[in-house]
Length: 129
Image (cartoon, rainbow, N blue to C red; front, top):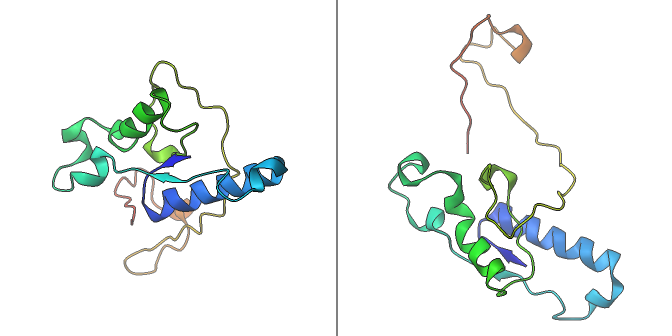
């Protein structure tokens, strides 16, 4: 299984391995499924924005090249990193069930406690990493 080394990517790769082993008992043998951690351009270039460098594919390209070159059998990507157009020769056959995201809503003075109560045309929403 090809994957990035981020905590999220590793969690998804290990979850994928676990589910494959549950579905196919022959894969439970030690070493039957190897997790292959790879660095991508997105992991290595930290001083520029994604848009400056070419977008989402920066976190998947090296993995896709390894897949197409038969270095790995499958890749596990976070959907947030997958470009709209997949490289020729690859498919997106399945997704893991979505987990509870535990989203948080924070307002500067507490006068709004639900997203639904924001004034119309509120356009300054942020996301924490």
